[in-house]
Image (cartoon, rainbow, N blue to C red; front, side, top):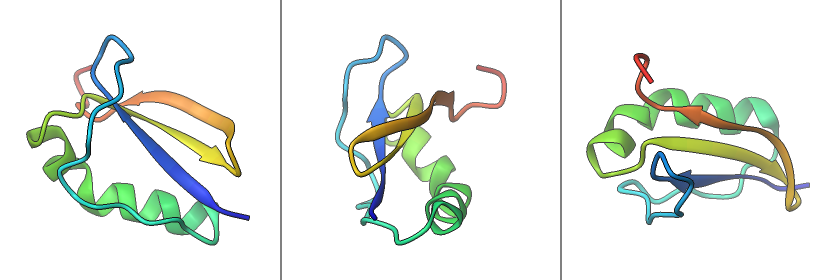
Length: 68
C-alpha cells in the first residue's frame, strides 16, 4: 500500500509541491511528513492537501492554513 498527498490551490487545482514528497508505507508516516512540511508547502503555493491510499481518496481537501 502507498499513501500519497495531492497538493492543491484553494480552488482544487493541483500544484507542484515546494517540498518533494514520497510514497509513504503508512498513514501515520504520511501525516507525520505533512506535519513537518506544511509550512514550506503553504509558502510554496499549496493551499490544501488530500490524502490517498493506492489512488483512493481517504480525506481532504484539508487546508494547510489553520485559518482556512
